[in-house]
Length: 121
Image (cartoon, rainbow, N blue to C red):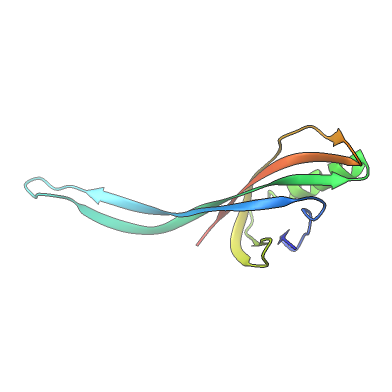
């Protein structure tokens, strides 16, 4: 079961993670009279993690409460993210959370969402 900051807010519905590549910063320097260039490796910066899924609940109030709890985790602090396979990813910031559909009714209530995280090295 996945979690973020020890909160299992996403267990109500299906969700998936897409882990992007690590971003590395390189400085390129050129010098007059010298062929080629010098490339300085400035190290790893971050990698982007995208989570998409669906929040489900029996009432609209339940969905709104989950949305509020997720928004509270967009606090600029590093947390631990545990993915669907039980792997832990440390130093993760929740950067963006948005619902991609309005709250709808079916066998209960649901809405789709997307979250962007940044993992720091």
